[in-house]
Length: 329
Image (cartoon, rainbow, N blue to C red):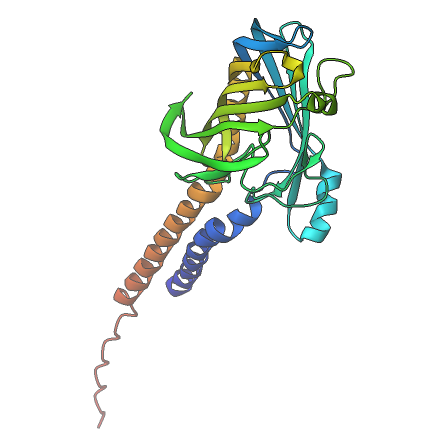
């Protein structure tokens, strides 16, 4: 009976020991993915900012500029692209909507971002765009890969339509979470005029005919939770200028927007809570369950060997030799 129990325990030990690396290195890369129907929004603010008054074409100080960013998963588009791409794809329809202190629109820039649900690498397909212009992204945008590493990544800048390194600058504590801090600098770059402008009838084509151009620079900062690859906080030191042309009269340039953009406090709290819940699922698949299964396998193996050794020590007792019966005469 002990021998049968030992064999069962040995089989279970092998099963759990084999399940540990399979869960971590085979199942996790296939199961961990961004859901196709995900929806998220975020509000950022730049207080005491500088903003262009398009009526007078003069820059003025304002109390606050608000940026509302939304990302909405387009399930229908992702399913259509998956058929030809042969892999799990997420399509995010994004919108960056900027309003001034009076609640009026400053700019409105839509995006479509298509990427691999598991690795977050861009997937190039019809519809990939920024502000209606087709683009071909390289590098990540919005989200880092699961199990983010302490290294530089290529990050796509939607304003400049360029990809540049965003570098790991250290590990920090943010609201009780261990996060990786990344920073990217985009130098002054000539960029396109947004298609939607705050003045009715003013179009990018009309601005271009005056010879006026738009320039942009930013220092982008992200605090990323490494297991989920989700930014829990972000900031930008952002500047835009209009330069030259008849639109500015005798001026060489005018500030269109300048401000230190930060995530609003209520959205920080919501994001941290959401990431903490997702982080637990990643830990289960990458640490808790693999190490738990491995430990259980070792314990079962030890118990199986113990039962086998004990069974050998207490084997069947030898029978005493029978005395010969006396022979009767």
